[in-house]
Image (cartoon, rainbow, N blue to C red; front, side, top):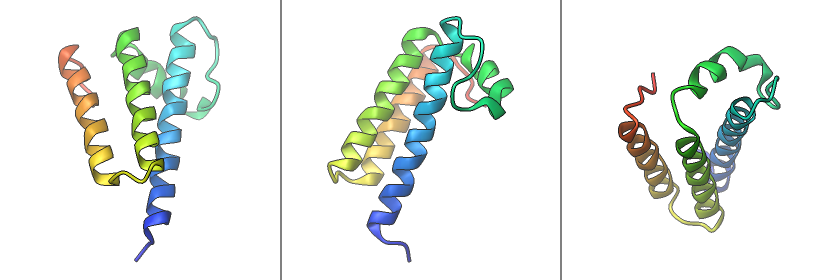
Amino acid sequence: FPSHDMIRDLIDQALTDILSVVSDIINLRSGGKKLIANQHYEAEISEFSVKFDENQILSIGQAVLECKNRIIENSSILLSLESLFGKICHLSSVGRVSLS
């Protein structure tokens, strides 16, 4: 069974990857011509970027950062992720966004 530290590190890396997508969305929406970190997912990121307004995108990025910080500070991983996904679901329901 994987150790707590290994699980924490894997989740931290996944959250870092999500932040790179958020960064690319912000770059695209601000007039950037190319994606910075996820060039191989350009079509998907371009499609996803129009589903949220600027405030929602920034709020998602902030929620991911808060989750990363909680996990780094040894808060419960499960509760941290639950809070993150709750915030993302709330943001998508406020803007009536389909995440699929």
